[in-house]
Amino acid sequence: MEIRPIKTEDDYKIVLQEIAGYFENEPEIGSTEGNRFEVLLTLVEVYETKQYPIDLPDPIEAIKFRMEQAGLTAKDLVPMIGKVNRVYEILNRKRSLTLPMICKLHEQLGIPAESLIRPTLNSELII
Image (cartoon, rainbow, N blue to C red; front, side, top):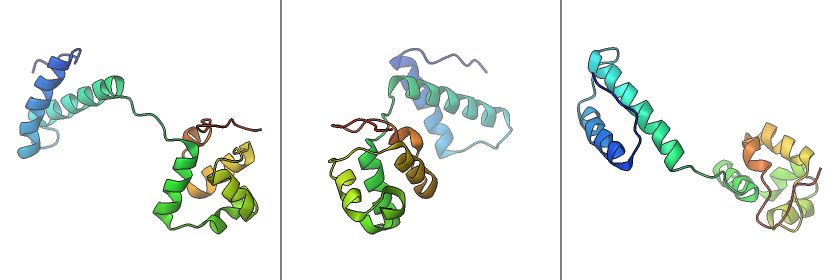
């Protein structure tokens, strides 16, 4: 069972070809082939994370996405942000998120704090 690190795009393509067969006929967990499949998947994940990083979303886009997911309206954000007009100012990028708003949005809506603390496209974090 020779397994090497994925260092180049060619290595990556070779490993992808190899694991494609495992998806069609998945080996038994804990078997030699099952362990090989698991290790190859881990190598692919590490390579993809390094080579194709995904940026966190803009904070306002993260809030809007969560609102859409949960069927929330601007009124539903009042407990976390403040009056409805303040909610609209935030959503329209007229006002920045404050640290207390970020904490409440994270705690109550489960939006990752890492997404919320990033500066928006045209504003900065206010503490």
